[in-house]
Length: 240
Image 1 (tube, rainbow, N blue to C red):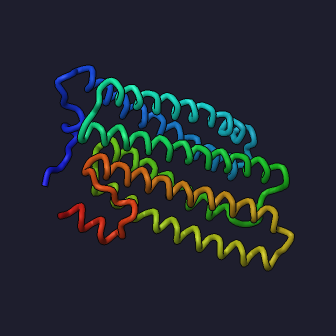
Image 2: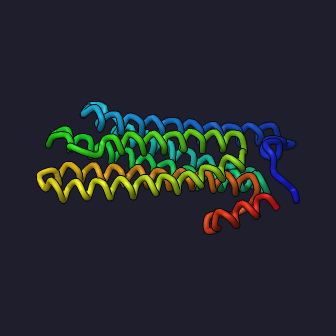
Image 3: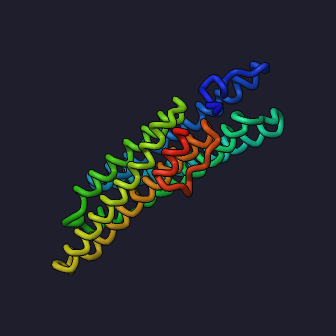
């Protein structure tokens, strides 16, 4: 079975084509780094009650949206002018899909920033911040790993990130159960705790989008769509 390597995506007769693909990969990594910072700032704004930082996160959403448009246009130009095939075409297609997921992560960060402002104005929630810190640390690590996986064409690491999303889902469900119990015991806290639950929901969705990034990397490297496979089937297919 032919296995795509990093060299498959970087060696072409046209040096300009090499440069185009290298720049495309660099731009997606830059956008990814921006979104990671946006998310970490949003969570910090929430935990510290920093409304100015939360506003900065919301402003940065425009920058992320502009990055999405620019990279989409870049992909369109490469397809039109270079007519990529095989692994190069998969790189472009994967990039288009990854940009969409990164933009959605940026949207979730902006939602968290808005909720941070709401909580700062109406008073901190009596519960939920420990869970927010724990799950946010988990998904931020997943995001950094996913970007590194994309840069290194690391299929094995990509598969482990998909597995981690299941752990995030379990952590999210546990946190929601705990907060719902707390609200029933102390109805005065419902408004604030409910906002924290929405923050946790956004973080859970970040985990989902990060798993998508890993799936796109697997497709880019191996040409295999694992989105609707069980973990067992995906592992079997990748190791066959």
